[in-house]
Image (cartoon, rainbow, N blue to C red; front, side, top):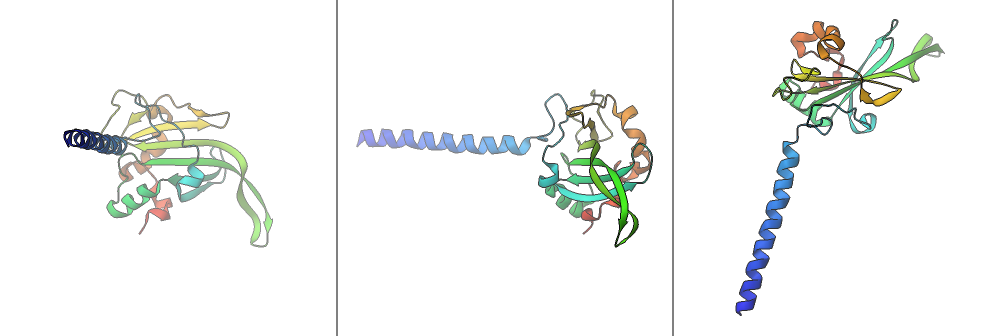
Length: 188
């Protein structure tokens, strides 16, 4: 009987530890800021954003360096949070993919443009409501900022968000630096 009590005590201890370990692992996972941000503040471009994220909306720029289709994606949880609160939640990731356009005559009309296979670049923004990286040159105004080019899609080529990114977003400053009017998915 003493062996059984000792064994059952050890078993209870092991099961309790396993339960604590599993719940602690979940807590760590839940507390993780973003799977696309390293401990030093480096931002990664989500590889499968077209299939794993939600398409929020698109822009079409007819001419200039930024010409083409600008498709913007985010996580489903970001859409749900934004619809509820009207704000991007901490850790939200926005990915804008720029593609060149081709135009042609179709049954819907002349000079109809569509996005072709030529990738121009990707912009990635990560919401940081806590100011986690105050001395990092790519973090500020409540966001992390990144720019990736097709010839090196895993290398952030932005060096300073104030000079490389912020200028284009100034008109959207009152909307948390995001041109959210073009994203019907965010509306209820």
